[in-house]
Figure (cartoon, rainbow, N blue to C red):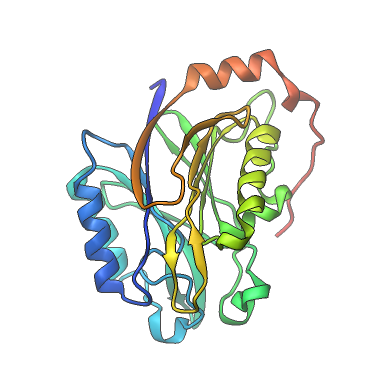
Length: 263
């Protein structure tokens, strides 16, 4: 297919209240008009950005993962966002890529936010996740990863870029909104790809405020849609023809440095 319908859900979250968050998000998902293909939720969508994984973590057989599976199947969508997962005695800020058929890929956040103590509560991931849907390749990342361009950098295989769309799910504080907006634009421009950044709104249990500022950017870093600061649910159609036209007109990736990422 030449287009991809992406829905972003920018919302406040109930602090460490899984049941309320899942109920709220389910209503928003069912209220999306038409037939979205990919629905993107914020980082730690079931709890907010909590450093209490011992109390809040679930396994991959837990209720929040089951909710994702059920919602994706019933709504016939791909559903993605991160939540707190326990595995082999360790805790992860894990993004799930849930398909309508129940198959699930995952990415564990590589760069843990030491300034907020995330590195003391969670284990880092070591593998990137690039998913595919309808001919689109989608690189999935989490919040603080945005500050580390090597982790997201295109490393073309021959003439083919690694991916077409970068997705960042986040709980990015309002006081660093300028960095959020600037770095999202930079990632789009340098990687010649669409970028979707989904952030939350409201104030969390640590009295940290979030401004939203969720955006969809084109491969030139120009705004396709800006959600502003209020809760909103927005669906945009991304166009492959525009992507390929930009890459053909400005073949900058062919001049890029080659490199290999080490674990």
